[in-house]
Length: 162
Image (tube, rainbow, N blue to C red; front, side):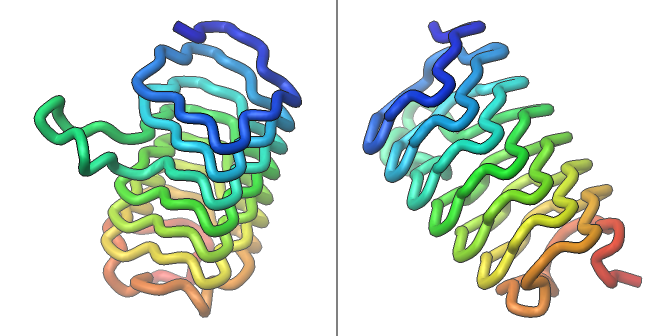
């Protein structure tokens, strides 16, 4: 259990954190480069964290245990660097992804419902079949390069959808 733990600034490069309970855990400015994180994170705070090439997507190797994935409702990811991360089927419901670096991420079927992506960089991200209902896309960078944007579910705000 990592509930209410403060891991601000920690070096967790290539760490594997699997099915821990994270309620209100703080990873501000932590280095999670190439880390593998699967679990229910709730209101985790990863503001300013480096998560480049992280494996936060669906864990297909553990399907007998049910669908294990990264699941954060209301998490804080302000200015987090997810460049190149695998976030497939991850949930960022009501998440704060303002100014996050999401370049080259795999967000296939990710849940971005009601998330705030104001100022985020989505250059070359894959949003195929992602749920963007109610998500805020104000001043998002690289929207014209996003793969699969025509297949997203729901209606985002300030993203050019009719």
